[in-house]
Length: 369
Ligand SMILES: NC(=O)c1ccc[n+]([C@@H]2O[C@H](COP(=O)([O-])OP(=O)(O)OC[C@H]3O[C@@H](n4cnc5c(N)ncnc54)[C@H](O)[C@@H]3O)[C@@H](O)[C@H]2O)c1
Ligand SMILES: CC(C)CCC[C@@H](C)[C@H]1CC[C@H]2[C@@H]3[C@H](O)C=C4C[C@@H](O)CC[C@]4(C)[C@H]3CC[C@]12C
Image 1: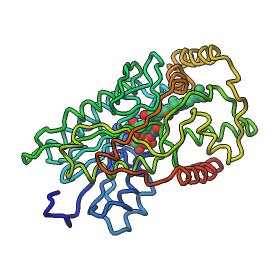
Image 2 (image 1 turned 120 degrees about the vertical axis):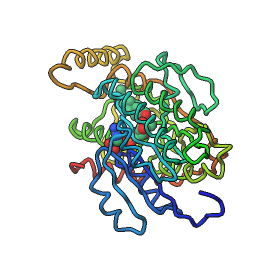
Image 3 (image 1 turned 90 degrees about the vertical axis):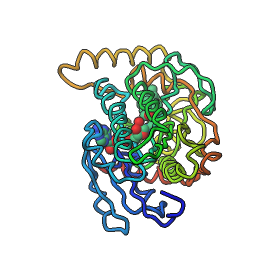
Image 4 (image 1 turned 135 degrees about the horizontal axis):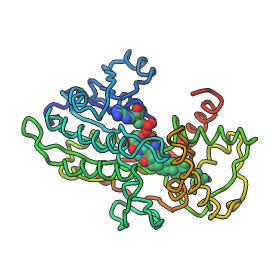
């Protein structure tokens, strides 16, 4: 990726390229990265939609593989100029064991870093998460904070623990010498709650509302702000960060960036209603219908049932003590660090993001997508 070789075509690898965010990153690279020569899409489960991309001008290589298998990762990374590592096990519902979450998110990330070092790949963008910071176990609010805001990050849940460890590995790897003698340049992007086309939890809330005759019932006070960011803007931020890592290595290397855009600050439920409302659902209650202690009790009951039933069946409802704490703790970001460091501006306005999401919810809610 030398300056003298501006016209050089680059090989990109996207791990987790068939996931919710990964698919948007893949499509964004194809649309917006002029130097793209080959795009490798690495995932445990390859999506059928990849086939249609193979007919375009850029070579698209689908690689079925597992990030926990070091040799599979090394084979995929070999010869790539840039790696966008977005593969991860996103589980805050107790579907997977803590060991599996650690294996995929931490060991998987270690394998990606080691593959870069061994094969001489110099640029690595990691998809981290807001949860690396919080909300913490004490329920402290993080109100429109930025990357430098002091906050007591205390993790107990396996998912945020794994993301925090993996992010640290990525940042500490910045500057390591890769095969060929050049330094590895890394950065981590921290999305808040991502929404948009492909967001399965949004679709599940929509279907639940339809089952309840068009009603959803407020559980969380409207005053609790929950950070959200549109998937197209998160994808764009990844593409830009990957592109600029070489030119601005000294500034960006080893840095973290929250993902942000013009999405409004609202509670988790009020934000969802921005899309579910136009799809015909109504949120009942200006205040939570149940006292908070009842929710705490129900969440604890769900956790107990999950534990008791585990030998027989997987019981993993949306409500548990961790998800309740997440939804009930203010956590929003306000920053311009990505703009200052690598010229990021959201590609999609709030109006665009909203319209695109509504259209997707309408289509997905009524089909078996
Ligand atoms: N969804 C959000 O709100 C959100 C917010 C912040 C950060 N993130 C992070 O963004 C990334 C993508 O999340 P997402 O919401 O698109 O999740 P997702 O589950 O839709 O996508 C993850 C992808 O990784 C793949 N994957 C999982 N385990 C793998 C393995 N062992 N080997 C290879 N591929 C594997 C999955 O098959 C899937 O395609 C994750 O790293 C997640 O931690 C997501
Ligand atoms: C009405 C509530 C009690 C219902 C519970 C909502 C719960 C399922 C929601 C609330 C907050 C959501 C998380 C949040 O948007 C941010 C992330 C970060 C990311 O790294 C993974 C996804 C996750 C955890 C969202 C999952 C769903 C949550 C917990």
